[in-house]
Amino acid sequence: METDNNLRKMQLAELQMLKETIAFFKENGLKYYAIGGTLLGAVRHKGFIPWDDDIDLGLPREDYDRLVEMAKSGQCPLKVTGPWMADESVYWYPLRIESENTLVRRYVHEKEVEQYIWIDLFPLDGLPADEAVQKNYWKKVSFHRLRFNLSRLRKYEPSPNKLKNAVKRVLVFFLNPKKMDREKEYRDYENIMKQYGFQGQACFLNAEGRCEMREIAPQEWLGNDFELPFEDIQISCIEEYDKYLTQIYGDYMQPPKNPNVYEHNIKELIIKER
Image (tube, rainbow, N blue to C red):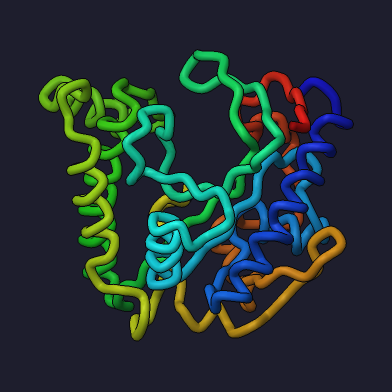
């Protein structure tokens, strides 16, 4: 990072975006939960994790899909971007809410780019409690996630897991990412994730989370209208956060020894107000 001061400026700009996003969600009856580093930050720091550089929110699938349709039809005043867009520069999944005026310079796949700062919005999908069903579901989701990632990134990205590396190399050899249809892979991936729907299922999953099957948890953990302090506001959080964070991170109250490994490839922060 260039300076802690710049990182803090970025966080405060994202906080303002979060306030506008929450206001829009409440106005339109869209449910959300702080997840990932944002939930951890709310619990451990009552705000941003000091070295974190983005915000993670999860929306139940029905609310997530409704937001996508609102964005497509121009009913959302927020700047929402996602994989349905034809723009090749929009390589990410899932949705992002982007700033209209604040940019950051970072490295993406070894290229230096300037991007508007963002909030990540993840779909929370439902699935049954049966472990065999969950394992089979996760295998299909993982396979289609890998296919979609290859189609959008157009290159092989090494994994720390040797077995996954071997599987990826084989798939890259046979699939030829440069010839893959990104739109088709996106539709297939979404259809697999939405196989069971969210409402009425025993469990939920953030399929795009880093912790794979540890992201599966009982829906009863989500609770209803539970909030925690985050900086100078209250945000909606998973009510059984202790069970959830322990399942994902272990001893989550113990900060990592080397927090720099959690940076999102940001080499320099250049805040521009337009």
